[in-house]
Length: 614
Image 1 (cartoon, one colour):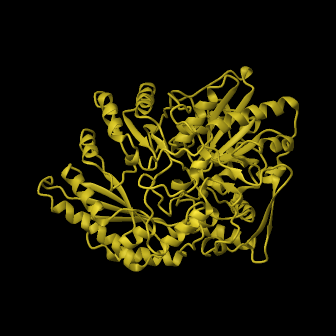
Image 2: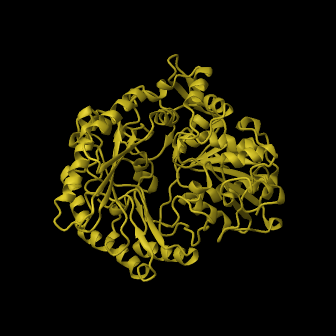
Image 3: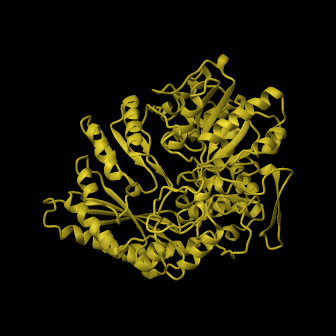
């Protein structure tokens, strides 16, 4: 609900609907009856932020409280930001139009490292100092969570506290505690000391970090009663945890403009490169009845005609063959499409194929990740060439004519033979299509190869590995293009400088805070967008701060080095990660969690319970 000053700017910007609020199912409350105001900030544009399931959940969860009001805030695009600064219009919540500087809590979700400069830019647009130490009052309290919070050190000097793990219960506990300290007139320091006692809460100002002469960490010391190890928070019972029955329906198209239905958390697979597969453990499933009811309620309240089932590996859901017929029983009648992202080639069953043939066909996406069996075994993908081809054969017989294959480049132990293997595997998929006697007449096949540059991430078996340099990745990209022999195969890949920066920020420490602020002051923002990313400014910032990015990205660590995230407990035993790292160099695989429990340690955070059901 914009005011007149804000409204005057809208006729000069692209997509003014990004900034007006008032969408179907957005929540407006009477400010006179509210004790707590929360600005939920997504540090990217409206279309991306509105697609994020975590924001949908926590927005509704807070607004269920009679004493609280949560509003959405997104990073304004360049045209809007320029006008806001020229006209001294501060960053505001979409529901009220009020400056978020006057809210009680400002929360950022950190979904990817290249959003860090946007966090600083949004704080500055609100008229707030970017450094936590310079914000003296109890409110607004600046908090952050999300997957990148598993190593919060690179932005630790900008955020008052981090929420590690899942936020449904933690958010309400923090709100209650902040309301209590507000009524008592407490200082921010008094509040933060007590907040640190909540499981999952990390307060950077309560820890000191010392360094060795070579730049590695010597020691992390907790002050006072702050816990030496901060354990992530998880939700034990997915059937009873809060899930909204309404989503805000945007006025404009967004990236994922549909109902999103979460079916389980965690992953059984143990791919050694995959951070999400480890930090979201243990596996916890919802029942098919609960999922079906929640999904139907969302379709009723939003009018969407598409449903996406959300998980790290949808076909690994143990009740998938029960769930799909239940949903189709009402969805097809209402002409609602159901999409299943994150399918696995090793469990793409005939039954699932038969059900998918009942809905609108889009391209199928699978992720072999590596071009050769040796490298797939090294990364513990547990997928064979025969399974990829067999699945492609099923898809083509089922009428599909487009397949997307995801791969990674720059993986540990990778050779040029593995790069050639990507093109070879894609060619075999093309050949499989033309071997199908029942293929549609006059219709060709399209195989899209999407190649991401591997970035070592915390809490994975590859967290100690050196990342390929930009030059190495560029050479491999050229080699891949030369290895593709047909126009039926289309190749896309990530730009190497952005991967280098992601690698630095993913495994960085507190010394990067100065670099991030310096880069932002030079004009860096929206770094995940090609049209904004300026690596020369980042290079200047690194140089001016005396920081070598190669120290963080391209250096192999020893097992005995103290890592910036070692003080956080995400459930995974460090020794388990070390063992998995060593197995990679022997191309030895580890069975998935349903075949055999590998005692990774994650179940200890859930009272020993894991729904992997091995």
